[in-house]
Amino acid sequence: MHAATESAPAPAPWRGSASLRFEQHRGQTRHQGGARSPLKLQRAFAQASGHCELPLLHTAGGLVGGDQLRIEASLGAGSRALLTSVAAQKVYGSIGRFRSHPAGRWAQQQLVFALDSGSDLEWLPQELVLYASALYDQQATVELATDASFLAAEVVRLGRTAAGEGLEQGCWRSSLEIRRQGPSGPRFELVDRLELGGAALEGEHGLAGEPVFGSLVWAAPQPLAAEALAALLAAARDARRGLEGAMACGALEQGLVARYRGGSSQAARFWFSRLWALIRAERGQAAPELPRVWPFQEQPLAALAAPNCSA
Image 1 (cartoon, helix red, strand yellow):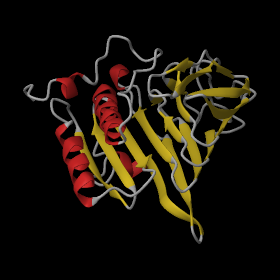
Image 2: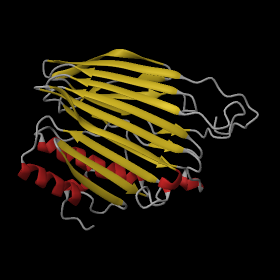
Image 3: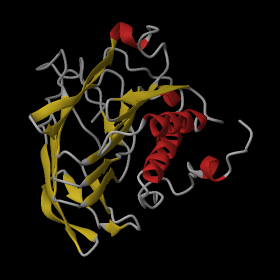
Image 4: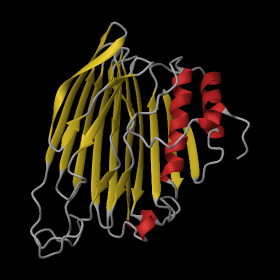
C-alpha cells in the first residue's frame, strides 16, 4: 500500500466500525456488540480489578488515506472496561501518492464513549506509527456521568525513524472532548486539540525534532483532596526514573494530564503504564494486568516494585 505511485489508482477506502456495550453482572463486566471490517473483536478476559479486557484487531494491516474507523462504547452503571489494540497501528503515506488526490487524503478515526454512573473505562491502544507523508486525524468525544472514571493513554511515532524516515509533509491531528454531567447539566472537563506537522515538528513548543509524542489523560470520578493530588503528581514524576525523553504532568480540575516527548516509544509506554498503576492504586483497585496482546517481554511496572533502583 505505501509503495503506491502517483499513476496508481487510489484504493477504495475502508469504513470500519465497532459498537460495544458493557454491563456489570455479579461483580464482573460483560460485553456485547459487534464490529465491521476491517475491525474485529478478539476474545475478552476478566481482570482481577473487575475490568473486561477487550482487544480490537485491525485486519487490514494499516490505514491508507481515506480510511475511516469509528469505535463506540457505552458503559452501564458500575461496569469496568479496558479497550486496547492487538498491535501497533500503521498509517501509510498519502501526499503525492495518487494522481487523483495529489494533496493526499486523511485517514480518520472517531471515538465515541458514554459512561454511566460509577463506570470506568480505560482506553489504552498500542502505538500509532505514521509513515512519511501520512495524514491522520482522530476525534474523540467522551460523555461522563458525575462519578464515572475515564483513563486514556496514546503514543504516536511520527515517521519510521529506524529506517531514517521522518514524517516529511505529513500531519497528525487529535481532538479530545470530555464532558461530565453535573447538577446544572453537562460541562466540559477537558477540550484538548493538538496538531503536529510542519514547523511544529522542529519547534521548541512542538516536538523539538523528536519523533515520539505521548499523551495520558485521567478524568477522575471525584475531585481529589489537595494532599492526595500532590502526592499522586509527585509519584508520577518519580516514575520517570530511568526513562529517556521529556516528561511532564499536571493537575486537571478533576484528574491529571501527562505528556511525553522524546525518541523512545517504549519509554512513553513504560511511563504511562506506571501512571496507570498509580491511578489504580489511588482508587483502591487491583494493580493493572498488562493486556495479553502487549509485548510480552516488556516489564514497565518493574520500577514501581523496586523504587530504590538507580536512574
